[in-house]
Length: 471
Image 1 (spheres, rainbow, N blue to C red):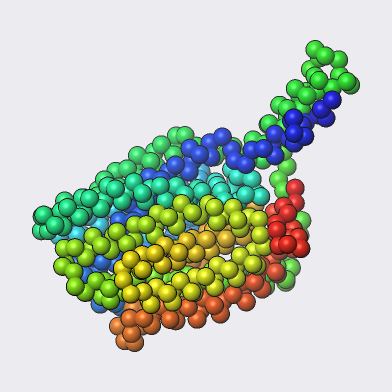
Image 2 (spheres, helix red, strand yellow):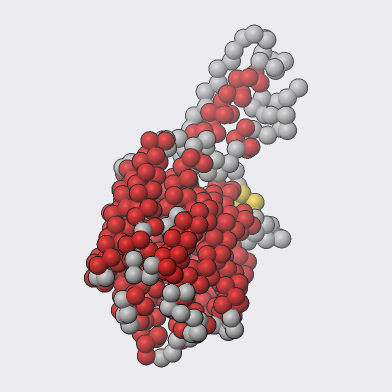
């Protein structure tokens, strides 16, 4: 006879389900967001340095405006995420992306760098409303023992599919116009308007289809309750035909210690914040100049009309594959020691940066860029998974703090990179980043070891370095 509250394999229904029913509908919005990402990653560096003809320092300032705007809005957004409708905030972020995309297109048509900078600032200010509530919803609607995978799927995998479709939209339009009608700027950059409209539609669909009150815990409790009633009718202790109503109470996972008074927790948390800040600085010191390095060092013999097409083609596989592989990497990180994950990812990332500036052809560059972007995405999801376990009640604030610190690093990094690019050497931003990334590993490991005993959602690590999630 089956025990109550079990299925044929002896497991509860809640053990078989890893996300809520509306999880897949919810994460589709990032597919529509991702349609324009690959195009914007290309044009932001290309148009500022080559279309507008600015210096590295000016480029660094333009690139720093978006994260700077997020610094301004993030404290408010972090508070609102825990105190108001998350769906409404996501909708505001989608509308903000539509507005900023429109400003980009106008600035390119009239060739106004100032307006382009304003569009960058508006994108940072308004799109910031999107991510903290979205990440918080993913955390609430997924099981804790596959949280990294859920975050990677919700952002990386869906954005990867968006990259794929967006590239098939933008590259032909941009490429054919560049070759046959190079002076038709409105048509050349028309994919921006297409992506602006699609973001508007996606935001509305998200708002009407997602139930933000349905959390993973509530959904699992409803499954367990339903199963318990059915199995009761099969038990020897209950007369067949009678119904036994079982009430399942839903409790929040307790946060049993006072973090304000726990010095060890505060030391570990502060160290993690430092890791996030320096990781962001190191990443943006060099990453904003990747396309410029490619153009100036590996594409000097190509015509001006062909160069941007080649750059987009080089970026395309790196952006798409890194996002699609991210859930697989996230699944791996859910099963091995975070300490081991940190060491592997950072060493690999440093190696790929060194190989990138050692590439001989654009083909070598493209292959190495794929591996580099995979390591960058992996590192980001690993940090997000750790942050999601710090607190349940204040997840919005935790994700908001993470993004605020990350954006602070993104303000500082491009400025440092621009100074190095203009005054030292074109490889200087890359070399400096390598040393920073390797030097950060001990601090990251220290932060994880300090925080591990105090996580609300704890994991055990066995002798083989494999996670064992505590139920």
